[in-house]
Image (tube, rainbow, N blue to C red):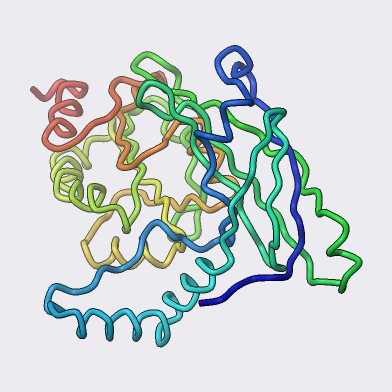
Length: 294
């Protein structure tokens, strides 16, 4: 156990993005919003599980000990957990977090209404190294955190253009596929349902990949490009692959309103969306119908 008794007081303010003023009350955020401050770049939501063969309490305890002490991923997660701080949000949208140690942090969260995410918040900032008691008395103002509305695209909407880096070091632009049907796949290697769709995507590509009217593009939401690169090679995947980094990639995810993955959609030659939320055998059948191969 580690008890933190030093660190900066961090303050800032939440502002509502366009169109949210009529449906979101800042006073309601304290009880329904925010996960707190996490170390930037460390994924706390996904971790390896204890293998099934470790079926006794002693074995599981040893596995956890070895994972958190002898692996880099485990050490990073342990550090991130100990440095996570709660955030208090006031009725005017201002927020404060106490005893925040030096380092890179992200303040993030989702706002739900009627069972779906309607807005996202993500603010990255750095707490500089301590300068003794002077900084203890002066809160660090990290500025505005914009609560951004989630755009839920539907059939008939124009698919937003994007330019993203491919896994092989090139550039992928949606506009380069003008005049073609494009199957767009938001995914990640850590996402079980995404991996489960690989056979359906491969079957679709095997059936229609040679058709000059058709293209497939997968957009990886992994935290490191080496993970999708390894997966693609190991599984013999040959359609276009892109990596959505934490800079421009975030804009693509927001523009498409992707709040969960897999998100697979078919875009028409006029860049209008034909179908969203495709899964299973429906992926291939929708593409077949669009191409006239019923």
